[in-house]
Image (cartoon, rainbow, N blue to C red; front, side, top):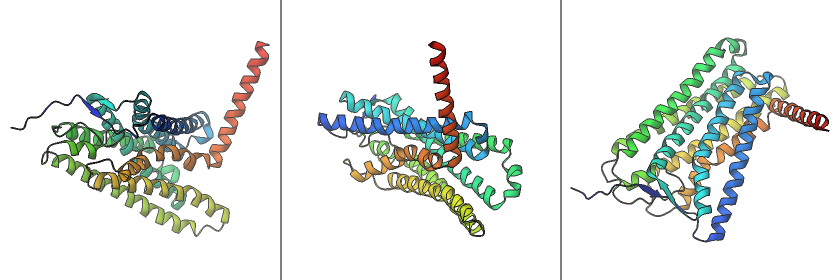
Length: 318
């Protein structure tokens, strides 16, 4: 019988052993995290406080921002803390929580991106049926389904991964607990069940991607029939960025989860992980919201209200 030792903690990838580069990594990740935090919180605040934005599209967008906040908060602060404290450790329980929450947020994120594509399809291709199809009850059910699908997918992967014996090492060649890296640490032949789960998730992700592509093919076909140049530009401005985000997320995730895991830290593995875990939460508020005129108008109104409240408070105190 193999001599397996119980793993109580893992060692994450350090970006450098040089103290100055560790501080640089901390500063860069801090700037990225704060930008993602502020951007997504602004989107959530503006959508919830402005009644003009209480529509299905913005309801789904607010959920997407919550998921982006969650996914980047699960992995980036821990990596920042490790660089600042010059350590690499993460507890076994912390790794379990990181895998579960990250899978939850990412799976639900993809589900909401798919729902948003369907929402745009109904709005542009079947505008007369939009209020009937995308009614309040349907939107709540779709959102609940996306969160539930994320939770089920996450529980499946977390349970399968951490039921395996980690007998080779406790060194993870990634800056967070990534499933392919964890599978590499388990005994050969014991992780086929999780590989099957990963393959199933990739199949579902490709299914979502095909659904999104088909939706946008029909959307673009309908858009070309719009006589107004401004109408076509508005439709393309909301659809093309959506496709870019989905393509970037799925392509980098596919690279990370389907390519063979190298025995030593790989720049490609690190780049792919950053591209699918850090970049989307940072870029989604810019692509979906800050370029949106309705969001911009609502944000200006919110800032004006805050300024007036501050001025009124100053007058009262004086």
